[in-house]
Image (cartoon, rainbow, N blue to C red):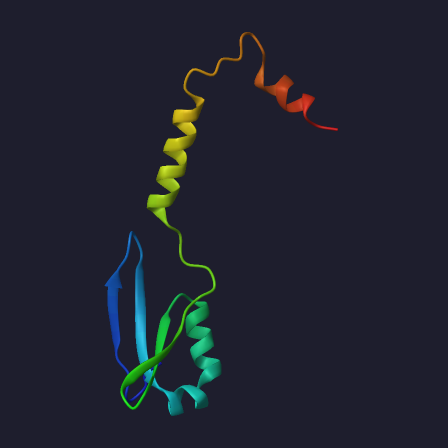
Length: 99
């Protein structure tokens, strides 16, 4: 969608790109449904009044954070070092925990 008074600028975050659009408050009021559709698809929208930013529409949940996932995986690997099953089978342990 193209709006007359807005622009799109991209900024880089960890591993995904967030597109940001700036739009005036009057136009935002008239096109709120379309703006919400864009936010739902990951876009951030800054709403301005007289050229000054006053609000920001952002998705409820941010995109996938690859760095955070890598840190979690590394933590799990580190925690599992030295853990031994001592002859137990994983399948038996899994079945033991099931009702």
